[in-house]
Each structure stands twice: as structure tokens, then as C-alpha cells.
Amino acid sequence: MIKVLTLFGTRPEIIKLAPVIRALEQPGSGFQTVNVTSAQHTDLLYPFVRLFGVGIHHDLQVMAPDQTPNQVCAKVLAALDPLLDRERPEVIVVQGDTTTALAGALAGFHRSIPVGHVEAGLRSGNRQSPFPEEMNRRLISQLATYHFAATAGNRDALVADGIAEKRIFITGNPVVDSLQATLERLTPGPEVAALLRRTEGLKRIVLTTHRRESFGETLAANLRVLGDFVARHDDVALLFPVHPNPAVRGPTQNILANRPRVELLEPQDYFDFIGLLANAWLIVSDSGGIQEEAPTLGKPLLVLRENTERPEAVTAGIAQLVGDSPEHLRHALETAYARNGHLPTGGVENPFGRGDSGRRIVEALRAVLA
Image 1: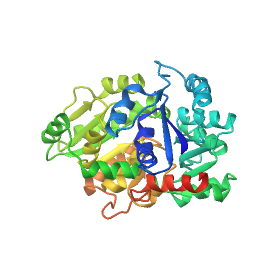
Image 2: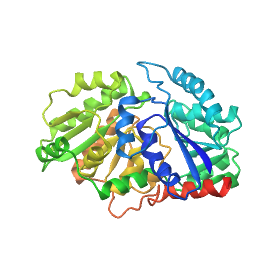
Image 3: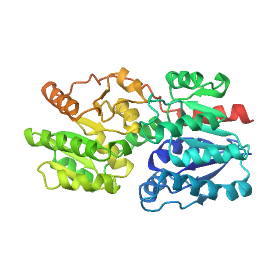
Image 4: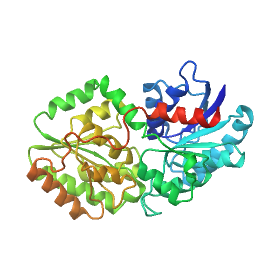
């Protein structure tokens, strides 16, 4: 049996690693999993752990209020060292660009344990944006042994960074696996079902925003634009699951609280959140994961960022970048309203995968480790 240590600490990581873990744990797979969470995000993570039925073998419990990325990285590294000594995995699998993923890749490198990187090769072109994710993912690429890239463009970015092609595997992104499995059994909970009934007949905008580079005046300006847009159009509703970070909650309460047709929600479980997206007229977000999900859902997306490491969504006609000024967001919203949805989403194939990425990643691991 090949022992694989999977490491994750945030909601996006578990959503994208769950299909990989499920494939690793299939009877007769030849793999033994050791699933480790850093608990970088505790409240947001564990509902998804339960939803996807992932067994946790070790919880590093690094979560603390208002800690810096350096503090998270130091805690994860310190906790992993004795754990790796005890478990002695043959490979460590990390996902994406979080501080947890970076710490896991660095811990593996220090101990000469091969590291597999799921969602490898994303590049925005700006080392400061998104921060710190862009630098995290570049550093993980230099530390990892095996690179599981979602698209040919991701592979090309890795090759341009000097990664040997024989170490790169185009697998799609397992977020599509999780999304497709969710859509097959999608039943929103009672609160979301009531919200959808309450907003029936309205053009629903679903908003998510949480990235550090958006904090401060940028976030406030975007919220004002969205609030004003809803106020101008009485057939529009804004549905906003608010991230628990005080840097998001404070401005949100100041700007959007108690406005008509503005629904400020607690963070949703995956079923409820996908239920919101599936019933949206328009999505507005700075999330990378939503850029990957929108093509499958067939929903137009305005990206609250100046750049994207997922240009395939823009090329496919699903997404539009609007994040360099509030005026661009205002214009994009009015254009969408005038055209009743302005991006050609019908029949677009998801460029990020077909729903079999977990299996393909495990097959690649088997090929290099067996």
C-alpha cells in the first residue's frame, strides 16, 4: 500500500481534494490515506468535511483570531514535522495556493518526501495579486515533484517556469467533480428555499468577496456600487453570503444592512451555496473557484479583480474582469441589465474539467509511484 498524506485547511481545499481522497480510498486502489487538516479555517471547513464524508486523521488546530500568514505557516510547519516523522508517507498531496498548502510543500521538501500539487500552474502575471496566493502557488511549483494541472494553459505556465513536462499531468480541476456530484442531488435547505421563494421573479445577483487585496476602500466602493444598482432597479435582488472576516463584515453592515432586496446571509454549506448560484441571474465575485464553477452552471460572472489566473473562463465567454475600478463594475452591471444578461453562457463546455479529475489525478499518482 502506498501511503498518501493529504493536507488541507480551508473550504476550497476540501471541496477540491474530496474527489481525490474518494478515489484514493476506493477498495483495491493500492493507496492508504492519512488526511490532515491544518484547520486554517475551522468554522468554514468542517461543514464541508462532513458534507463530503472525509475522515480526518489529524487536526493541527492552527486557527487563531487575526493571525498573519507567517504565523499560520510557522504553526503548520511546526506541527507537521513530528507528524511526518510518525506517519512516514510516501507522498504529500496539497491543493491550490493557501498558506497551508505552501507549508505542506515546504515540509515535504525539507524531508525529501515527494509533493503532488493539485491545481498546479495557475498564474495571474502579478506576484502581488491575488495576495498572498499568487506567490504561494509559484513557490509550491518550485517545491513540488508532481504537478496536476487543470488545463493546457496551466501546463504551459509550468513549463515556462522550468518544470519538466514529464512531471506535469493535465487532469482537469476536481472542483468540477464536486460540483457535478452536488448538482445530481441538489436540494437547498429550508432557509435558502425560503429565500428563493421570497425573491422569485427578481433578477438575483449572488455576490461573494473575500480576497485581501479587495479589503478597504476597494471593497467599500464595490458594495456601494452594488447597493446603488439594486436601489435603481426594483426587479433586482442582491444575495450576499458574507465572509466572517471582520474586514468584510464591517463594511458590509455599514453599507448594505437594512436595504430593500438586499439579503445578507451567513456562509452557506455547499449544497445551499450551489443552490444560490444555480438560481442566480448574475454572479459577482472575486473567487477563483467560482470562475471554475460558472461554466458548468451556465451563469454569467463579473470578476471583481484586475487579473485572473483562470483566463479560460474569460475566453469561454462566461466571465468578465471588472475589478480595476468601481465605474467598470457599475457599467458592467448596467450593461447586463440592459441586455438581460450579456455574456453568452448557453452550451459552454467547462474548460476546467469533465468531472473525472479525481480519478485522473489518482491514476497519475499510481503511474509514478507504483
